[in-house]
Image 1 (spheres, helix red, strand yellow):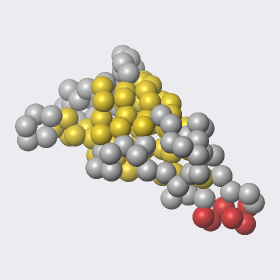
Image 2 (cartoon, one colour):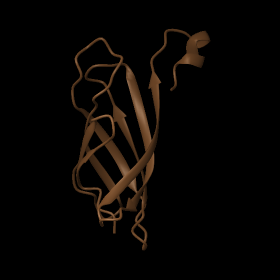
Image 3 (cartoon, one colour):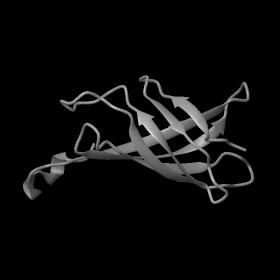
Image 4 (cartoon, helix red, strand yellow):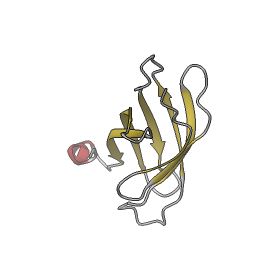
Length: 112
């Protein structure tokens, strides 16, 4: 069974800590990004998410990070947990980042 609780680090050096996952699969934590285009200094930000609890242990999950401490943007991540060759859990994710824009005509460039 994949256990999301704990510290995770990605290829770019960003880190997240997921606190306890409850019996329904809900969790919270903090995300410490290593990359940003914001002008303010990077700070750890809150995340909330949910995990699909299944029998084979290779669960799917999703979470949202609110970058409110240093940016006018929000990111969503979706992924799946896989068992690595050495028995370690590996999270594989995709993400979308939505930045604030000043007008509807600029909407096209707001999501990465």
